[in-house]
Length: 432
Image (cartoon, rainbow, N blue to C red; front, side, top):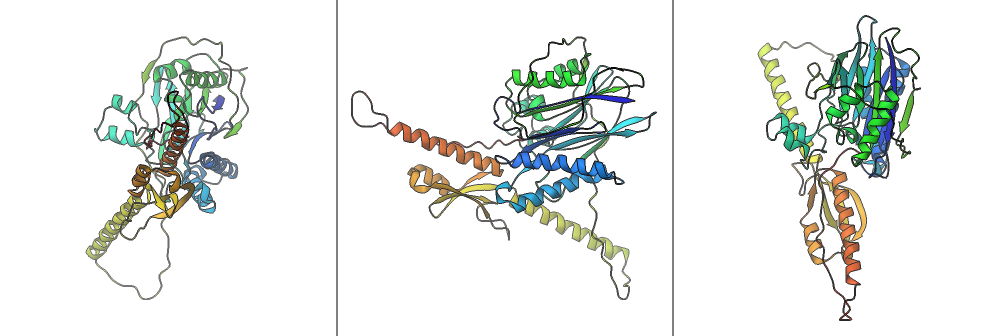
């Protein structure tokens, strides 16, 4: 069994920076889509890929099972070290090729909304499931699949590395055979390229690199609204596909990079698409419990007492985690003194969790009109730090337009016409 792969990453046509990081070395393939601030997403995604490379190099027993947890811890440490990186995070989808010659397989792990697909025998299977607000709504029946395509919250992640210390990662075992293709990609690809087109290209005779380049070009042709990262792995049986170009391993870290020219190779053949086929039941990376040595005389307790205390402890822990999650996973824009600021938390606090000042901007109330000041004093709540920063960017943009409008003089009078523009806030966030 041998592999041939292609890898391509592009900033797209809208974003000024590529916050994706990717890697492929013949046994491990990974895509990380960073988010948070101007450079935070780039740093978070690079840390995730660096952790995979370091663990894979060490080859310690069970290294792939621990790499996501270690990457999460490393991102949290870096965010605590530098205040400007607070709130950064990244998706991560990685595939590890191993097993025997008779039964080769990929172990795929994923958190966030970067995806893994398997094309086999003319059918495209989506292996991973998106960890987004919209997917939760679809799963619980609140909205339909079609409604989810255009929902304003489709880019809001419910899970990501760097979000919190606790971690839940999906794990899949994917058996493969000669002729199969594995696709890993960020959402910049599948938001612009349909499953049918994905299946057609993966089912073609193009090389892995040609497929990757073509998919990136198609996403850009459809608008390229986000960073686009693609890895295509072709699986061959022994002796099959000899002489094909094998691209060397690459690690693209947040490059703004140029774009490939569209390939002239054609795509032929028909495929059936099964976009909702899933892998095995989801599993989570286990979190080890702290072990403590307890000395002294042993105490005899009944099973009933132990059970009651265990249930009580678990209930208290669950309530504490829920309160902590609710208290810390929110932000609001406010005024402190003469400055516009951003707090983490909810206005007024939740129980013992009080809001924490995370950003003090250079924007002063003296540059705002009375209506804008009133809105800010009422607190503008946002779900993420990135959304709060987007609100401030929009506010500054509106102030700039308002200033220009005040200086415009009409032909019939020497007085200026003042136009007040209401500031807008976008609460949609996503992976960069």
